[in-house]
Length: 318
Image 1 (spheres, rainbow, N blue to C red):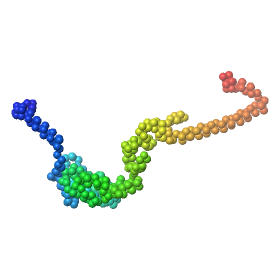
Image 2 (image 1 turned 135 degrees about the horizontal axis):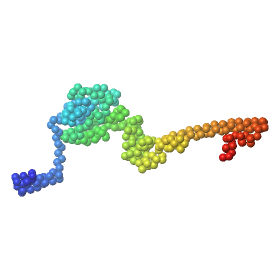
Image 3 (image 1 turned 180 degrees about the vertical axis):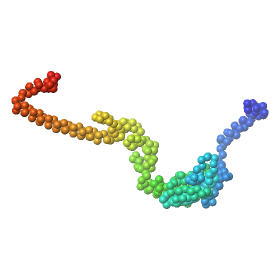
Image 4 (image 1 turned 60 degrees about the vertical axis):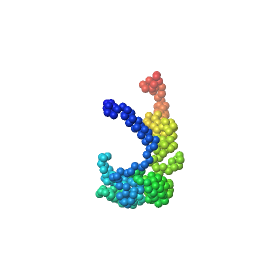
């Protein structure tokens, strides 16, 4: 209906011309995409709210209760404010171990507080990469080591994460280390485990994922051993120490690692019972010998006893 309305209003030739002009414009935009960086929204402040200088690696605090809004459209204290990463590290004392930090730090804009001793860098602030991309290009130095210079903050962030010798990292154990001392700390940290396949130090909580993705070893849920994926079925059925085995003596299900002890218990029970029966048998033999001697001493014929005894006579007839 809308197409017929356009034809009636502007004419068929004019409509074809407009469609062709739009297709040409669309092809030009695809073949020659714009490379200009969009400007940040006018409402966002491009200056750090702590040092008041232009932002270098802008971050947004997410640790205060005032930043945890229930509605997606609700504004918070840091909707339009950003902080330099270096200023945020110093304000939240992330360069210190958790035990040496203040127990209460106040929000920069309201009265809300948070306890940095119980939080990690990942849940204190987040890097605003979109805002970083929108910022105008200018030469910046690394705010931590002052040994790197560039004009793109994305390259600066990559330097801080992978190369900077002064940037402070917090281990899951709570210790603080820098890039030069990282490997030394990991080698002695109790939260890391050594992979038996590649001898690499890996977080104990991520060892299962490392073994699966890097070496195709899966963790057996029963014995907690790492087994090649292609051998897991055979391991569960025949080689797992935690598999259940049926005992033919008591018909019970026993773990394989306990099966030897279980069989030894049956062995001792049976040998003890046999020994008891042998002792009883010897005792009964001695009593029988005494009875036979008494038969002979009193001149009683054993044949007459068998005939007069209904039990022995039935036994002999059967």
